[in-house]
Length: 182
Image (tube, rainbow, N blue to C red; front, side, top):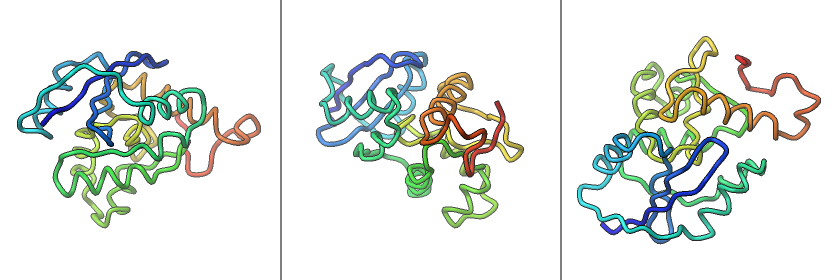
C-alpha cells in the first residue's frame, strides 16, 4: 500500500500525518517513532511511505481546530485498519462532542458492550488517528485523566483547549457532560 507522510507543527508538538488520497490514516505525535511503526504494522501489512505535503482538506481542518474552530476536524475523512470492535469504538469516539468527556464504561455502553471497559480501553489506546478520532475525551470512572498515547500533558492541554473554545466558555465553570478534574 502506498501511503504518504507529512509533518506539521501544532501547539502540542509536531504532528505526523499519514494519508492516502481521500483519507487520513494516522495522526500521531512525533515523540514516539516506535508507536508509529507499531500502528502502521498493525493496520497495514505492507506499506511504503513517501514524504509529501498533505492536501489542504486534511491540513486546514487540523489547523482550524488548533485556532479554536473545534468542529473543523469532524468532517476529516478517516480510514483505518483495525478489528470490527476497534472500528466501532473509534466511530463512537467521533460522536463525543468537543469539550465533553465520557468514561470508558460509558463508551462501552454506547457501543452496546456494557462491562467491556478494558476492551474499550485497549481499542482506545490503539487508535491511530489522535485528535481527529478524539480518544483524549475518554477518562477514568473517577474523572481522572488516564492513559494517552501522546502523554497526559497533551491530553490535559487538548481538553482545556476544547473547553476554552466552547460557546459561552467564559461564563461557564463546567460544561454539560464535562467531568471537572483540572
